[in-house]
Length: 183
Image (cartoon, rainbow, N blue to C red; front, side):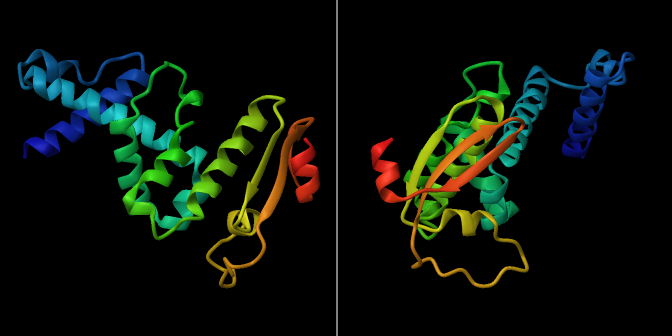
C-alpha cells in the first residue's frame, strides 16, 4: 500500500515540476510522509533521470542486451559513478570502462567498443571534435543490428573508424590501419 502511495506521490511530484499548480502539496502538508519517504522520492527521481540519460546515450547497448539487463548495469553504474555536475549531457563518459570491468558483461566483450562508439558519436553531434577508434569487432555492423538482422559473425574483421561532424550530420568513415596510425 505504501509503495503505491509513494509511486503516486512521485508522479505528482513530477507533474508539480512541470505545472504551475502543485498537486502533491496536499500529501506533504498532511504529514503522510516521513523525511525518509521524501528522500526516497528524490532518490527514485535521481536514478530515473540518470537511467533515462544513459538509455538515450547508449541506445544500441540497451538494444543489444535488453531492457532488464541494461537497467541493472545502469543502476550499478549510477551507484558507483554518481553525477558530478548539473549537466546531464556530461553524464556517462565512464560507461564503456564500467562495462569493461563489469563481471556481468564478460559474455558480451564487444559491448565495450559499442558503448565507446556511441559516446564518440554523441560527442561529435554536440561539438566539432573528431574521434578515431579501433575495434577488433565489426562495431558498425553491430551498431546497425536490429531484430530483423542476420546473425552477426563476431570473428569478422574489426573496424578502424573516423567519427566526425560535417554540418549538422555526424559521419562515420572506415579508415585503414595506416590512416589510423598516422593521425
